[in-house]
Length: 370
Image (cartoon, rainbow, N blue to C red):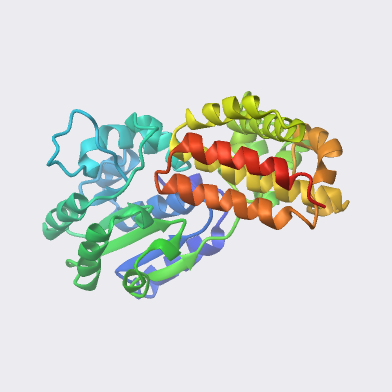
């Protein structure tokens, strides 16, 4: 893994390398930013840079992401085969994780859940993981240099794990560097946030995504331009747009179905719709609700003919031509509040059938508000 695999983000790369050259590298960094901007790519490239001592053996291990001083921590699930006393740790899924990251540094939680085979569970980082990390980092560096601990999505740590990790950060083992990759820093303990150096990773510029699409994916400049604009700074979203039958197309179909059924007040069909939604894993349910929020925002902008602020695919725009007038000043906020409440409820393991059926019924009322 090297810097060439990072899409854009030259400013962050230069900042990280300047810390090293000026000998002021903190023992704990936290890369924060939205999904798909390259936080994990930066963390992996920087971690490999720190461990590269110039020896061919080290380079070979880093190329395979199998360096003994490179440690990964990530959310896990509990499999039926595990005992009731077992606290899942990263090592339980080391094979699946290695296959995922070798496929590239840009991936989602859903990709990881599928790799683990637990789409209907909530992945967390357990206290067992922090105990395991203490044990690993207490050992001397095998190569005589840094030890690098990359923690993916630390906001998913349970409270026991977070408290143990805090102690580890406060008294870090010799020449250990923690690199946290975080999307929701507000969910982390304030004591942890105050002890790490935060670096905000911004969205990737449209022209950089466009150039990468042409050079790395071989698509036309015209197609790359439209996709880059839709991607809104996320390489992952750009990749989704390239996929035939992508998840976004399925999400659009569900959005259109909900709106039509709610407008027509077809209660029985709305119940069936909610059952379809309940059949998805919780991570996918939350992603659809996030997509729903985006579509509501885009239709609101479209309704007021703010074309320069509208970011939709051709299919989304086709539906918006007739639908956008139903999203206005009178309902934009309550609709958004409704979706955010559903995201919270799903995150707290509420009954998905009830959540989505209630969501659908309330849309009947909200769509007629002026």
